Each structure stands twice: as structure tokens, then as C-alpha cells.
Amino acid sequence: MKSKRRKNRPIKVEVGNATVRIYTHKRSDGATDYQVADYSTGTRCLRTCATIEAAKAEADKIARLMSSGDVQAAMMRNSEAASYGRAIELLKPTGTSLELAAAGFAKAFEILGRDRMVEAAAFFAKHNPDKLPQKTVQDVVSELIAHRKNNGASEVYIIDLQSRLSRFGTDFQCQVSSVIGADVGKWLDGLPLSPRSKNNFRTNIRTLFSFAERQGYILKGSNPAAETDRFAEKGGTVEIYSPTEFAKLLQSADQQFMPCLAIGAFAGCRTAEILRMEWRDIDLSGGFITVSPEKSKTKERRIIPILPALSDWMSRVDDKDGLLWHGTKEAFFVAQKATASAAQVTWKSNALRHSFASYRLADVQNAAQVSLEMGNSPQMVFKHYRELVKPAAAKEWFSIFPKSKSNIIQIQTAAL
Image (cartoon, rainbow, N blue to C red):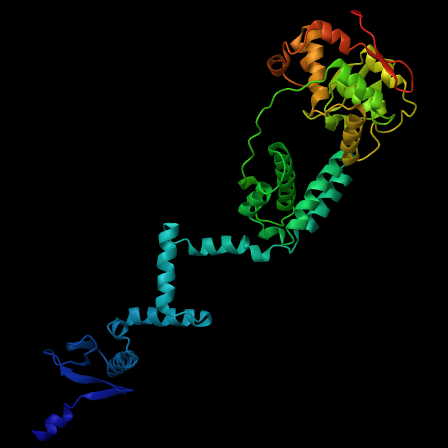
């Protein structure tokens, strides 16, 4: 009896402080199998194996998992345990536990809506800001200006671009890829300028980052200036000069600035167009000024008739080569202030163009004609300039002729 008990004594498999027993079991058909006693769940469960080798392997697995405290894994079947082991091996290079990896996967699944972690990781790797070229804002400003020069941009445009963007680059001494929309918006808000001037800065900054995007210096679709709002430009009262005021301005202007005054007042050209204009654009003998698309704000070519008073003033200029204005944009504005001060006339913003539109509409009584000459819509001309002045004042305006080359002028009108 004692020998039979010894024969049926279970085989023990020990790992650490965990022990798992294997029992030999005779089936009703006379065959023998082996039962592994699993207490990992707190209750006894016999797992049957066909061979002693399989039983020992199962017992060893259970004992190891129980010894490590991983009771849940000890309850796995062989295929489940194999998957668990493979998962552990895959995670070893990352240093991440299976629990954290599973938590991360579950969160990513929730965010993406389904299992697209590999695609999401590939997308992030491609668009990772850390992999972008290291370019400072000022580096990109210099590249943009050089690019524009090589592509034939006008000198006036280059000067304006350089002036505004250099100021921006001085305040943003950082990587261009690190600039965010909120910072650009705060910077624009802090400029002590009018809404229109702030919008001009915003346009140039947006151009800068569009260039950076094309060069691959920032991520596609991440132009920070595009995230800022335009500033509301309130339409103010249209200001014009009286014939007497403008006569004083012409009398006080020097030989370089006088043609610019005359073009603005007698042809209605914009300041930007005047700064880009060349003497070859002014056909005094033919009687027309040509504003080419590249020099026009609207990018459309237009022909402006040279009225007698303008022809007379322009013919008094000795140097008719190159640009109409030889100085910088900043020098142009200095000349405006200096001329107004000498004439003791208050300089009014955009008043030369407004004056031309008002007097010309009163003179010809044709909004469509004036709109073609100015590059505006007839509706805009009719809305802003109708009935600002009387026809008699218009005759007086377009009869301001020079008396001599010394710029001493007289106003000759039919009424006088």
C-alpha cells in the first residue's frame, strides 16, 4: 500500500517560491495522461497534457508566471502565452512595459477611430518639425529678397519688402519653423501704425512664410500669418486739395518731386505706380501714359491721357531718363512732408489721387471714363467722388499751368 502511494506521488516543478505539481492519471480506456495542478487563480484547476514533457512545460510556465506575480498570464493557454512572450520580446528594445504599450495603443485607437497607428506614426515622422532645415527668420528674409530680385521684381517692391521684413526678422530672432500664428498676431497688434499699414505688414509676412513653405522650411499648411486676422480699415472722409492749395505745392516742389506731384494730381496715378514709373512710360508727344500690368496695383494695363496742364509741367523737366522718382520710398515720403511744409499746406493722405478723381468726374461727367483712367470700378468712382466739386472748380484745377521753369506758377482758368 505504501509503495503504491509512492508510485503515485506527484512530480514537483519549482521556480522560485512557486511549486506546481504534476499527477499521473489513468484514463478509463487504460491510457495514461498527466494533469498539472494550477492554483494560480486561487482555486485548484487540473490541466491535462498527453505527455510528461508537455506537462512539465506547462507546469514550468505556470510556476514561472506565479513566481513573477503575473497570475493573469499564468491562466493563459499555450497559444496565449506564446503571444504574451512575443509581445514582451518586441517591447524590449523600447524599454516600455506591456501595460504601458497597451494603454498607448488603446488611446491611439480612440483618437484615430481604428487601428491606424503605423500610418499615424509615418505621417508624424514625415512632418516632424525636428527634421526641418534649420533656418532663422532673417535667413529666409534674405533668401526671399534675393529670389524676388532674380525674378525681376521692381526696386520699389524690393525696398518695401526689405524694410518691413527686416523689422520683423529683427524682432523674431529664431527658427522660422518655430514661429506661431499667435506670436505674429501679437506682434502686429503692437505696431504703432494704422490698420492699413498693419495689413501691409501682414501681407509681406504672409509672403515670407509662403516662400518658406515652398522651400520646405516649414510644414505644408502651417503659414502662421494665415492664422492672423486682417485689421478693419475704416473708410474715412475723402480729402482733396483746392486748386489754390495744389498750386502752392507745385510752386514749393523741387525739380525731382514736382513731376510726381503732377502725375498724381493730373493723371490720378497711385503712389506705388508713381514709384515704379519710368520716363519711357510717359509719351508726351503721343499724349498718353502707359501703366503696365507689372506696375499697376490691379495687374491690368491701362492708358491715361496726358492733359494739357500735365504735359506743360512735364515738359519743363530736364532729366527724363530712368525712373520718374530716383530716390527711395522713404525719401519720397520725406519729400512730401518737406514740400507741404514749404507750401504751408497740410499734406493729406492720398489726396492727389482723390483730387484727380473728383475734379475729373466733375469735368467729364463720365464715371466709366474716369474709372478706366484710374483703374477703379465705375461704381467706386461714382460712390466716392460724385458731386464733391463743381464743374467750375474742375476747370480751375486742370488749368494750373507753370509760368516758367522756376516753378513760379499762375492759375489760368476760363472763368478768370
